[in-house]
Image 1 (spheres, helix red, strand yellow):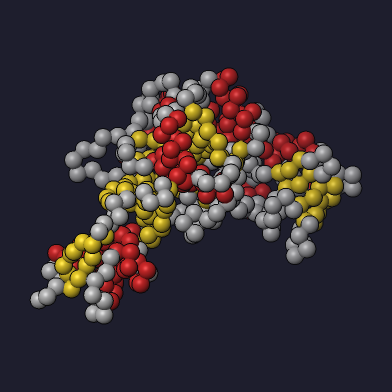
Image 2 (image 1 turned 90 degrees about the vertical axis):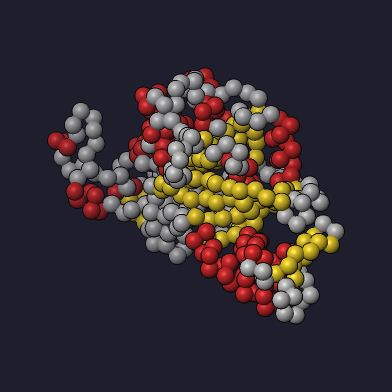
Length: 397
């Protein structure tokens, strides 16, 4: 019969989560996928799923894959036979945020400078720490988040943090402290910190955890090996923020836009490309409208096309809020729908603001603004102002 040590080694090698308490040993069920539901009893040599709706039960001796011949072991390498591969049950894919952030893997969030990478990372951290679905749409697995910020000063970090986080949730920072991933003492310290209860670590930014040349593939291989070592030893999920290179005229943003050696994204499981534009709304609030595309996804689940959302720095209550705007590919159709709704509404309304339109049409702010801009340029609407708010009217013609 396999020992607990043998099974633990096998689970670690295959990145299979397990719980090893003082009195019992559990893993996630390979059939019903319920967390820590399979209980191993090493005294009687059996394991079974505690989920009443699941019938997984077997002898522990059958748990580990068997080798068919000693000849299959070459210089310590473990060979999987054809029959073993055919008999293997594909394991479920796990995400911290499905499908954007795969669990216990590396996610790269890249953008030009000033596009809102750190802001987006804090929004992700808020949803992970609170366990609330991102934009009310993308499922989240709750857990504590550590942000290692080596770019911004404490005043900037705290000012933004207080506008987003109003209750005590597990988001913690290291600020104004040097961390280098290839420094063994730094790495050991981080492992100990993460093992105290963190699920996700965010590096802001990637280049700040390096001492070498980001264009040197050999040096970046070493950095990747340390990131993977961190994941293997702590089961943490890694997110890092990265800059884009300067694009040539006519180039479009893509996976190749990431700065430095291609080795940087070689071990990345998810690459999120971020772009944004900023403007002021009718109440003079600063708004950052962001788009996200998933340029690389090693899992079978991935983001279809691009998604858009806006982040509002609300001056009235000194908070930062965000709102999902939908898939970018539907933009043109939604703008046309918005134009039709606006023209119909103005048949009975003397004048409307953007906020009026949001409340009465349930159309996103971005689509409303695009529709209003087109209607004004087509001389179908006039614009007036009352106080701080802009009002839109049907033209007299």
